[in-house]
Length: 157
Image 1 (spheres, rainbow, N blue to C red):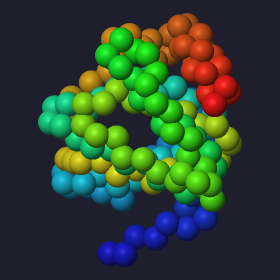
Image 2 (cartoon, rainbow, N blue to C red):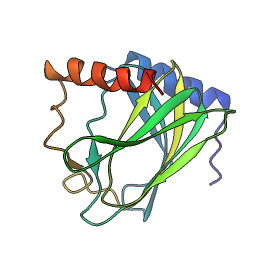
Image 3 (cartoon, rainbow, N blue to C red):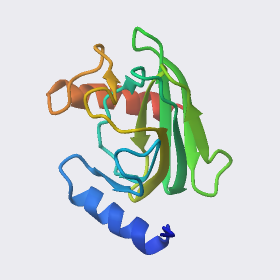
């Protein structure tokens, strides 16, 4: 079956993201057992994606911005920012591929931001992500301070 990405699908996924407590929503094109995961990932400003890496097994992850603006940030093993890639629909940089084992996160810089995300599969929840011990757990008071620090660094770029 042919799967289509159009404005209507992106808007519907963005609306679901905005209504979600996590401020993000996936629209999967893949089955969990597929060798390649393919999805729209709508992320609103303020959504916290805990820094993580993919190690078990090694998996690459690619982000291509289709709508809006976001940043893909990489970190060293101590949680220090290494690189920041600003992705903007219609801009100079549209996507990045994060190699296996690299700590990273994604930050939405604009309402209605939608990425096409492609990652090696299959999806196995217990081994999908290795979360950074130096980054706060989701839904804890430390998240606001952590995100404010990241946002401050992004505002200087």
